[in-house]
View (cartoon, rainbow, N blue to C red):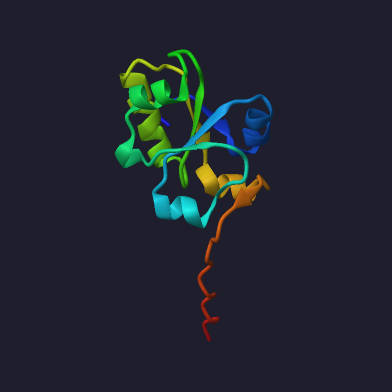
Length: 121
């Protein structure tokens, strides 16, 4: 992930238990469909201003922010935005919401699953 700090999605419950801030940077529609059941912040990547976000949350430059997206690509971009803005403690949640689901992290939402394809003859 290009020297961006990261943690496994399975660590989400420990982050929440410790009072850590998780930021979901997916789109609004993705967030409605499936999101963490635990408290977390939501700000789409396209609208993210790291300085404004940290100020709105009442956080200083050294407070860790754990960033989540679908896989971890947008989270990596967001972490780089935080670093470029002078916030060095942005941490990517590896594998994003997909890895969180696979790890059994509690999720909420109205995820609609596609119908399975019929088997090929």
